[in-house]
Length: 246
Ligand code: PXP
Image 1 (cartoon, rainbow, N blue to C red):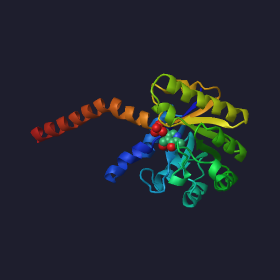
Image 2: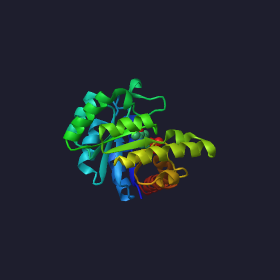
Image 3: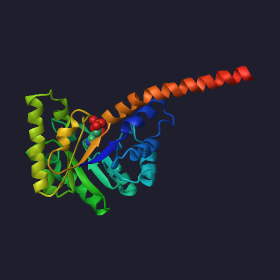
Image 4: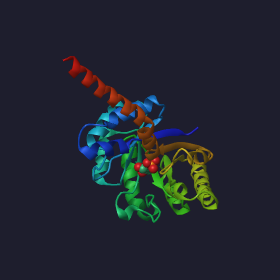
């Protein structure tokens, strides 16, 4: 069974909406671990729109499963990764020019730049994975760099309507997966996976890791809402009982 890396960026997005301290992604990571997460995934973006440097520092200290840092090939972020030493870095596109048309990192188009970042990170003992489209050109370039793993971008699969189009996207994932496994790279996948579409991707032979965020956090909000409202009712009840007593 593939490992599940739980992406907690959206918890930080909610915190940033008010600029306060809650919900704290550090707490969310602990709860995800209690739920059985095999890894915690965070994306430190150059604009710091959700995860902050402080989160990376604290999560490095507190996460007991694998910590996977998604990041762009940007010098400032590479320096932070070298200091924090997550177990794994997944290089993703951030600036427009790093994108292929479909959305993965354009490894083939900037092999020297990506290779330089890979070497620095690996030298610090960090496993490196590249987030790529299931495209033979990108797979070949990734294999040529000799990284530990590649994460196949499942966005197009997830967005395709059920039926022949979805099956075509699944087949592209399978073929790229086969090539990566044959070259002895770890096979990861992620983006847009949810409770309905995850099984087919999880069953791709030798799938080692799935990184999932949005659908898990969405479900957490909804399955937790009834209890949260009940607890607020109790808190209001307690205050009114206290004011009657007083
Ligand atoms: N993997 C990578 C490389 C990502 O950039 C993201 C999104 O941050 C994910 C996985 C998780 O995607 P989602 O939130 O759609 O599950």
